[in-house]
Structure formats: structure tokens, C-alpha cells
Length: 335
Image 1 (cartoon, rainbow, N blue to C red):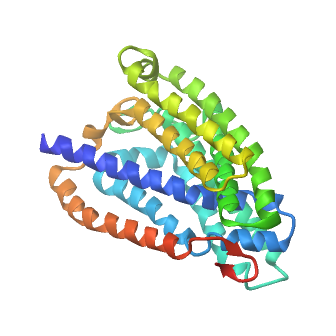
Image 2 (tube, rainbow, N blue to C red):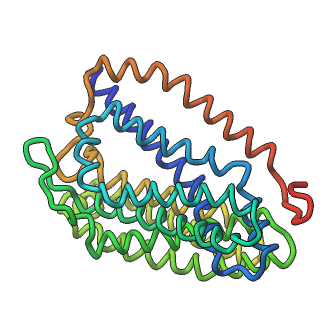
């Protein structure tokens, strides 16, 4: 019983780390996706300034999620990596190029357009590959004798491509609503105008993915449409509709906080929806959380450090956002 409890506690910790990464680094990546739509250097500089104090801390949660999967669900890690090797490697390369661009675009005028393209290209590659990996995981990974039994290109399907496009558009929406929150004047108005098509595109993509997912596997269909689980699953679409209404009403009324929070809520609810579909599997359709977990001793040992580490990261993250709260002045920084 203890092992059962520990495995689900760890699944919750890893899911929490991934979710925090999505809601924090999502708008961070979204800013890079909006770079080609900017009008001048002042706009691009103030966009990067809005996340420059926190962007590297946001990616801490990706390390925690990936490291936690390796430490406490080694069987799942050994299956996911060969199945998604290409999109994961491309995602990491995108994050590297993007991180380098953060540092180098301020140090040159001649090569600044190159680093701007690296910032956009890295953000696009990382976002698209995250969606591709998610779609490939949702559609299922072929497992035989506790090992990956699929092909090299199994991750590349119409459904995974749709998920990749959905994540790209969704991150752009998060970036635009974040900049609407942090900026003022003409740049804020420009970002608010970009938030509209990104939000509409996100809602359309979420609808398509949601309609497609139940037909990928009979378990998904039963979870969402069979009684009595459908009574609980129906709560998620209702909350999604409420978040969509809040997002569009907030943008229409030129509000700042509500559109950003409602955009984040869409991602949180989408994540919850995936959890509803997956449970109790860690890799659908055949590997459960309990089957993939490491021995109880390893789970207990890792948990001791994690209960200390996670609150420290949360405190640091919260403090960083508190220190750099408020609007950004293009000439002075935060005020």
C-alpha cells in the first residue's frame, strides 16, 4: 500500500512540475513567437525585458519534471526517450538557441537581427516540439516486453502535428496577454491586438484536439462519455467555457489581469483534461503509474530531498516575480 501511495504522490509531483513549467515558460516562449510581428527595436527590447529577470528560473521546472521522471519512473523514462527522441532533442536545441539569444542580442548591433531570428526560431522549435511530444504521448506509445516497440517516426502523425500547432498558438496567446499585463502605451495596445487572433486560434485548436482525443482510444472515450465518469469529466468543459468567456470579455474591455489569468486557466484546464484521460496510466495505453515506479526505497529517498527542494524553488520563483512586479518603462525598466 505504501508503494502504491508513493508512486501516486510522485506522479502528482512530476505533473505539478510540468504544469508550473507550462504556465511560466509558456508566456516566456510566447514572447519569442511574437517577435516577427513587432514593429521596431524598441518594441522587441521591451518585450525581452519583461521576462529577462525570470526566464531562466522558469525552466527550472522542466529540469525538475524530467529529472523526476528519470529518478522515480525509470521504466517510463526508458520508453519515452526512444519514442520521442527527435522532438525532445529538437526542443532542447531550441531552448539553447533561445537562451543564447537572450544574452547576445544586447551585445551587438550588427548581428542583432541574427539573434532576433535565433530567439524566434528557438521559441518556435521548442514550442512546436513540446506539442508534438504531447500529441505523441496522448495517441499512445507501442510497448512490448517493457520496452519501446514502435518505429522511428511514430511520433509524427496528423494528431501530434495538430497538438504542436495548438501549443504554438496557445503560447503566443500567453505571451500577448502577459505583455498586455506588463506594458503600457502603444506597445501594450499592439500586444492586445495580437492577443485576439491568438486567443481565437487557441480556442479552435483546443476544440479540435478535444474532439479528436476520445476517438484515439476506447479508454479515453469511456472516461469522457460513459456514465458515471462523464458526470465528473463534464466539469472540465464547463470551466473551459467560463475561461474563454473571461478571456474575450477581458480583452474587449481592455483589462490587463483577467485576460492573462483566463489564458493561463485554459492551459491548466487542458492539462487537467489530459490527466482525466490518462489516469491511472503514465504512458497510455498499457503502462500504469504503479508499474513504472521505482522501488519503494528509491521513492522514499528521493521524496525526502524533494519536499525540501520544491518549496525552496516556489519561494524563489515567487520572490523573483514579486521583486520585478509592475509595469515596464522602455527607458528605465521596471517601475
